[in-house]
Image (tube, rainbow, N blue to C red; front, side, top):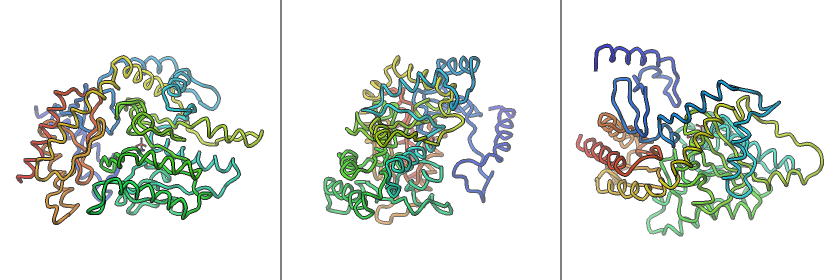
Length: 454
Ligand SMILES: Cc1ncc(COP(=O)(O)O)c(C=O)c1O
């Protein structure tokens, strides 16, 4: 690396001190000299010093089709030349119309109504606002409580953050408290000694039903849940849990919102995991991230015909859903999404994930032989490797610091991780091959062993 390269990196890091990053400690703003990522190709990113690394988290669970997709670049450039923007209030732009139809055709069940948003948080916020709107239209304005879960992550708007259950991240942040209720985390690893996974599942499903009964079914609007709690550390609820929660919601006329911001668009080997993996047709599904593979910001909320039909059945008066964004159905983002879906089809990405996921799981599970690894959780192409230095003396701060060490070592050896407290979280681009899985797990092993030896 030349002096000039190093100096250029330092300049960028200095400029970056004005960028208040997500989750940044404002008392230390600008203190951290962040890695500057300048290039991406396939599953790899390169930093400003020329170091090439596997992108373990796939951006932020989003670069599903991988980096360097010329087709998306071309589609975006062509759309910008034709029409960069037009108001979704007064007209429609062709990519958005085509995308809406295409998404409706691949969405499960009767989820035929697509409400475009700017990302995942706004998709979740819109789903919750739609649930309130729905009950207002149906003449039951009291039915407004939302049930969510500890460990979940649903976004960073006021309402979506309030439904998130990463408790530490509520510190110093205001939350909607009067209508949001969090159930205990459905993590089978945290069940009491001697309790079977089946009994634990029964208990977690009962938690939901009991909460609905406690609040009163006529007061509860919706239950929102990720099929796999992603940012919570890849928590995989027990078999059957998601489906049984859906049944409880149907029984009590509570809307079931599947937050598939991470799991949709291939992460679990299907466009949507709700139906194909968990056997559920939700009332609403929220998506973002993999919709454009992160090439441009966009989210999409899917709303069922059943809900729209119930609103229509109330009477003949108009019922405006007074919600939307300047960039709803943004033509350039929609063009990126269409090109992204073309890649999924042409390259058979869903089939590739179905074929590669068992190997990914096998190689990751082998890491459990390292003393410090307390649990390996894998579903599709998402994984969490949790570490605990001393199970007899649990100390989350100590284990979080350990993971930061692992992260640093892995980065030096060519792998970017995402430490979530004591868990290394991974969701690589879906194009990852078995050889690349070998590289990823070998570097991670090295990192875990080297950090343990320190
Ligand atoms: C399950 C889930 N929902 C919602 C969001 C929020 O999405 P965004 O950051 O695009 O607003 C995220 C982000 O990680 C997520 O993982």
